[in-house]
Length: 323
Length: 302
Image 1 (cartoon, chains in turn orange, cyan):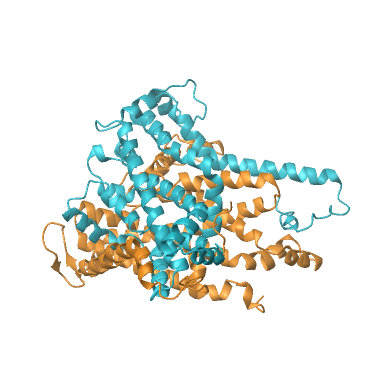
Image 2: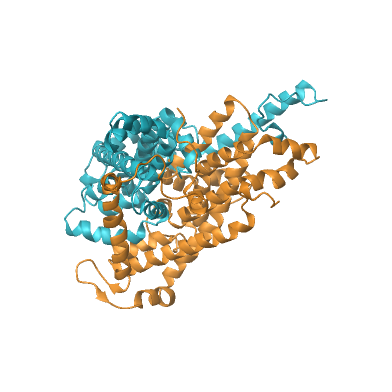
């Protein structure tokens, strides 16, 4: 009983190449019935997605405290964000640093472990795969983040282990120079999900290709660089896009590790954390809406840039001649 | 350790033993491989083991030796305090609330996403292409752009501090990832089966109910498991929508420990953390095959 046939592997692939909209096996004139099946989704799409998006765009041009009517202020929120709000820029900086370090680190770990596991055939692989995947489920929880905080705290296991090597570190969670990296490591620790996707990708590589490379005298490294990585590039791209979008929205871990305030000294003031603070502690709903829209635009632009660059390095099997 | 990696890519026929390599070398290689993998695994699972150990360590020992893995003596004191709960509400209440939210979310996602999935996978209707494209886009949409207006509406309807804002969106299939999962799976079901049912006089509803839905069980199970775990772990929306202690879910109950820096609550904090992770652990053990293959085939983020 296998789960879901991988006809199209990912939403990203659907967007790049796949055909949207399923019409296979259908009969003409089912429009009305189809919309009956779609009713819940349609209500949700309009009532909980499209309309709120429009309203939040409107709110982003207002001052709104939830209790009095919104006051139109034009671009004032946006202007304040980029010129008058030092903490906002701090939040942008923290989030960018987090994304730029944690995503590649996580993917590198995922790829390394996937390559290691792929070299093992037989029963053992399933066991290791499941075991390495477990942190992906646990790491998103408040419970584990609390433990993580203590592990990196003064006198915790990390300080103890580094102490053995004579490296003296302060409490990671109390030191502005370290706190963000504790959260980065917590993210990297959850490499299991992309690892599973890499493993599935590795299994799709035709063995003949590697055999041919071997016959031509390619060593391990040569095969990795010239055969495996190009063949794996669509999966790598998918993971990169997904993890990047995900990382921009990181919240729970930062909230817990920083005791809910982005501290110490705003060193873990993630974008979403500051948005939450502005909206739900300061009741500046207009400002928070403007922040949300900037986040959306930033994610859209970065995703678009990734798609653009993907033409240079992502190899889809049907292009033939490249590489 | 990495040299043999690519030589062992599975081939259709069993690979002949490599020439001129004594049998002992392969064996040694396997031993080294497992040693490396187990060492990596120990490192990766260390935080979980540490948390478990800390939850049964007496508080005074935790304060002096936070990094100790093996406590000098075991105690259930932390669990006792954890079950007493926080803010005058017992742990059982947190647990019940979490279960209600999770169960409602699972039910909502299974029903609404399978309905939408069937329409997109099997029925022809105007705008099906653009609508499906839109559904895919919403997967990537950060929730923050819809958050505040949604909150305002729920607030004006007097539904803040109830479970409605947490469950209603699932009933309306806003987790588009699962719509996508359903579409993918249902497209894999042979269309001849629909055809046969149609010839026997079934309309779309009965085809859905008696042909597609039973055959989609694996996708429904995957949807249920992931919805459960994501809802169980969800913190952001519960933090926003639930504000009185008797409505707190487990993550919010745990939150009460976040601000407390006094080490006297360490035992209860670690014990409640373990309790909060337990259901995920059980789900993981019971359904790991579904979880892992769900991730592998759809790229669920886990």
